[in-house]
Image 1 (cartoon, rainbow, N blue to C red):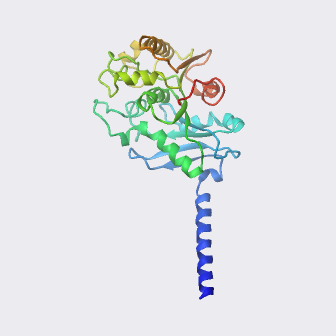
Image 2: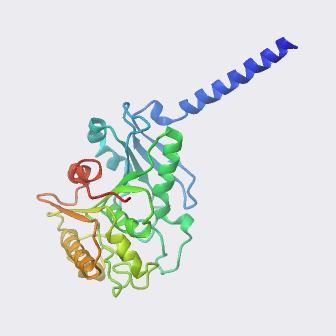
Image 3: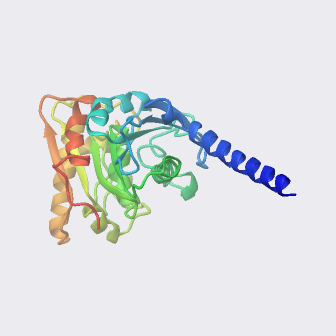
Length: 301
């Protein structure tokens, strides 16, 4: 009887050990610092995550989430951060949402709160819901102690990031950088959405909260060419400015005037990078210092 009990106990311990080993081995970053995995727990469709997990990473290593531009080339956007991530030891998760899943600017740049016809989308299929899901899934699988993530987006991804900070004020974002957004949603209650907030899901009080977020706008002063997507190249977008650079300057000036008028202590910053156009790779070192370096706005309490 005792032998049978001992054998059963030994088999149980062995099974648990094998399960634990299999679970650990199933994580792609255990074998490769740089790679990709599929995320299929979003109701909106299947996503890919292009990751960098330096070999020196621990449960206390910071996490950066990256939202690519309109080409959705998450692997290229991940690689722009590789040398910095290895040098300074932080984790990068670049979100890949294909054209078949995030089919237009309303779903991608604007997070999917409404359809192109203006109808509401369920929160479960809004692209805005993705960063927190990716973060929660990764931290659970990695055993991370992190409770917040830094957030970077460029071009269409920059459009996503600056409006994400409006749409998700309670998201666990430590710092955010929106670089060269293709067009902007102004904190203007009189301008129609998506160029302002009229006829949008947002209320006047949301503007005050938005302005207090730890958000930095980075613009390349040579980003002077026209955009090509439907909303980005529309007459309303061109009324904001004939280039991303001029649109960004107008947006930031309007936001600062709004903060003064509403007596809001804003948390935003602006950096203009000389000699750089619509090029995320050349802006990444500047974004790093705001996201994970020393030139950082005050984080949310």
